Length: 166
Figure (cartoon, rainbow, N blue to C red):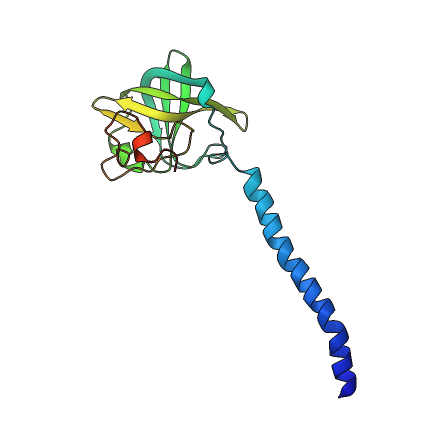
């Protein structure tokens, strides 16, 4: 009996030390992953300093995920710059009934190269009778309400009134 107590006294501190080290390693590893993705939006980076506005006609509306593209709704737009793959994000699925091939749109956003493919990260979408804020001025995705407008917006694209980035 004494032998078991002595053995336990020697091994218990070692076991606790190993457990503590293993416990600390898991959060540190997770923190590195979170930090490496900080400032990224679904793998794509929004650059407000290089924002562009273009007008065109929707060729196709895509709601399914395509390899190499960010998750969420996309529209392929024919413009003076050629065909533009424009990303609207995952919160605008209810717009697919309003956005159809042939609809004239004005898109404001930032071009990004994602896995060798040029995409437009749309910040603001305008089409007849509607102005939709898709991203904040910093490029963070904004959620929609059931009516297809951002919560708290007055269809003028001002994200400052609804708390900016989300």
